[in-house]
Image 1: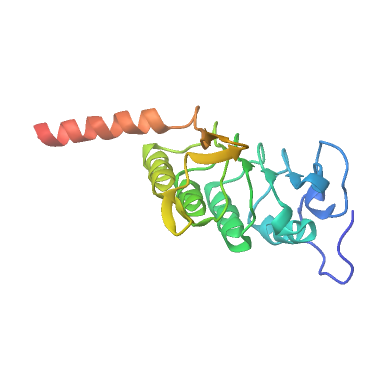
Image 2: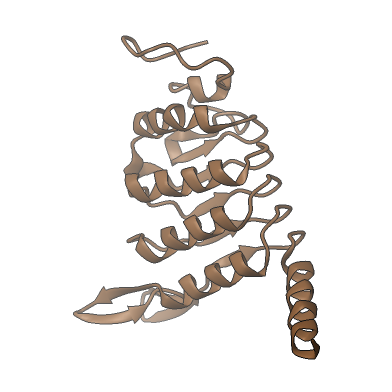
Length: 201
């Protein structure tokens, strides 16, 4: 395993993929960092991995990070929220964020909503399928997308859908969010049943 010269040893259990800061080639663990892609899929990551993830992004340089894959990492909700906050703090211009097949809930969804509202760059894809997000977290994401805006020629305009101009033509670019296989419908049905029961009581 590899670490930065002079840096402290990593915490016990730190994923080898988080230590390989100079790996550049391949589509597996590590990804193609020359193109701003960081792939840590299928690594078991906990709170102790956040400082290592920060160092890995710093090695890549935050301004170059375009795609981050943390799918299938068994991320609990709190760690997902910490990842969201890390991306807010580092102002990385991520376009594609893979967080599917984890254990993320409404706390992470709230952190991602903040990322969507506060970031300066357009997010193109947000993959959140196969998690534990309820209708509460889903609504926070929808409201954040609707509220996101930026300045163009002094005017405040919606960020989504954004307009990409090619030559004399332009077309709208949406933000694709995948939320299937979460707890959105089940939690919404439960809330509706509770409201119905409260009204009849």
